[in-house]
Length: 201
Image 1 (cartoon, rainbow, N blue to C red):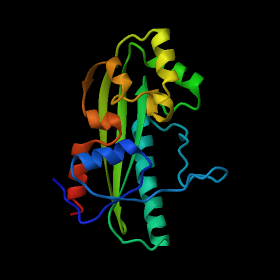
Image 2: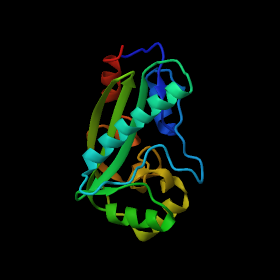
Image 3: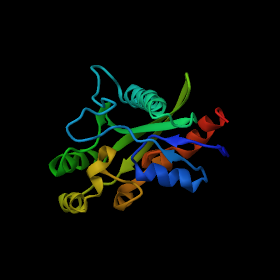
Image 4: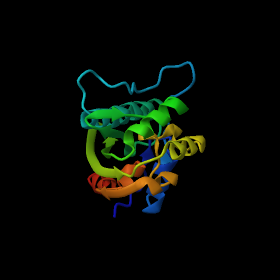
């Protein structure tokens, strides 16, 4: 297992922090700009003709590049920076994070009774060197009733999650089967992360 002397994590996700801690990897947070009224450091809009895999891979690498720029601007220690991005794919379409409760209800209605894929791309950057990896997992959902969807959305759990669900939370009860990386669906595929970080040891 990779045991870095130091690592920067450029992510606001509590889940990613918990997963790194789970495998004993220490880190310092390096947060990008998301202040109200100011443009984000990385534009997460989907480009014309961009497929879900290309989308998450591009965002992970762009986040890494911007994070390295911020590290240099803030004169922080020049240690590897880890970034990640997750999206849900249904029938070739990208399903991101819901913008409001109605959007979350709509997303969950689309995912009910389906087989979909969750893609998480990770990237590590150090100086001019950047490398990335991808985890793609197939998830089968059971049929969800309207009441189940409404109650789940009312819990607030779906609101900042790709596909409007958290497999590590209440939505774990909706998953009939999974083929791939469970931690990749949570938001940080641990095997791929460990393997990628080893290249920077």
